Length: 215
Image (cartoon, rainbow, N blue to C red; front, side, top):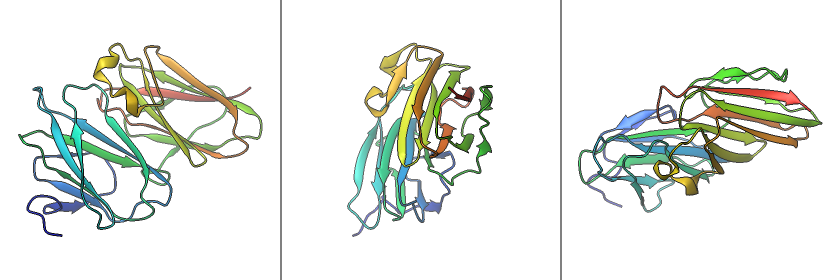
């Protein structure tokens, strides 16, 4: 399959935040077998829609529109089954697009104690622990607007946008929950499953905090 722009200017990538100019791309050589969370964020100052090509395992390209003037990223959650993942900015105009990819094992996580105290979760920082076989509560607190928390409990991913004053500037359909509240919590008996939480906010000044409590 021959392309003139798609996959023509790729650099190796580990999933960490990367801003792609028009014509630039990244390649994740091997995705995890399990859910991968990919974020796309249009950083243009004007109302110019971006376009991104997504290819994996030699497939035909999937062309994804990347909305302008958003305050939170678009979210793709998918199992690429260990194949490579190529992303190319093919925008019509000079639209910079920031991309990230995260899954368990990406970006060395910090510990999340289960003492009920809040611990910092800076943009692109993650925390992890093994849940106890009893009811627990995972608390998320936004210290700025449009704080994006991605949670993985066992193999089940979910994504939340917390402290969202204008939901029109969030791609709501991509999120498990969008709330105007400064806090949000999940409570359940996760039966000893491993828990991860990561801050995937597009605005790098958006800090968050998380807590884990035995109920």
